[in-house]
Length: 269
Image (cartoon, rainbow, N blue to C red):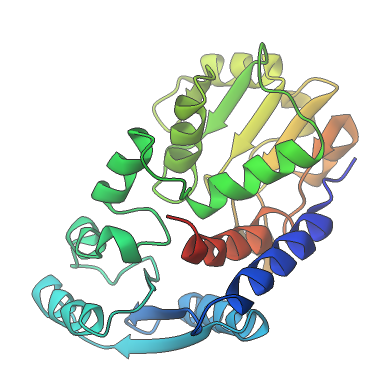
C-alpha cells in the first residue's frame, strides 16, 4: 500500500501555521543559490511557494561567485541579517568546498541540519531538530505504526542529504541497520536487500532496486530522485511496489514531506 504522505503533510502544515500565528513576528528564512543550476532554481521556487503558504517570509539570494572564499563572504553578509533559517541549495558549483560553506552556517540558523556542529548536537541528543528527510521518514513510520524493533533495516547510500541523516536517526534510536554503498560487493548487496524488512534508499540511481531483489511484505522508502527521459524517478522500480507492504512513490512521496519538515525546524530548537 502507498504511504499516506498527503495526510501527514496537511497535518504538519496546519501545525506550522498554528505555531507561526502565536509569534509576535513571522519567521524569516533565506535560500541561497550559488551558480545557475536549473534544478536548484526550481527547488528553491517550490520552497518559496510553500513558505508563502505557511506565512513565512522567504528571501532568495543568488550569487555567481565562483570560489569558496567569495561564497563565505556572501554567507557572512546574510548571517548578519539574523534570519531564523538559512538554507544553501546543493549541489554547489565545482571548485567550491561544500563542507566549508555549509559549516559556516550558525547552528541556530541551520534548519537543514547538515553542518557538522548541527549534527554533533543531534548526536548528543541536545536538540529536537531533525534533518528534514529523516523527520519525514519518521513521520511516515509513526502514522502507519511501522515498528523498527527487531526488523532488518537496510539503508542504501550514505549521502549528505539522505543516507547520513537516516543513519543518524536510527543511531539516536539505537536501532541496528545495515548499509549498502558503492563499495558493497554485489553478492552482499543482493543478500541484504533480499532479507530486508525495511529498505530506505537515497542514491539517485534510477530504478536500481527491482522487484526480483526484494521479498514480499517489505517496506520501501524511496528518497532518491533523478531524471530519466525527462521525468523525475526514484531509486526503486515501480514494479517492486506490488511486493511491498508499504511504499513511497517518486515523485510525490518523501520529497514534498521533507520540505515541510524543513520549515518545521524553524519552530524547533
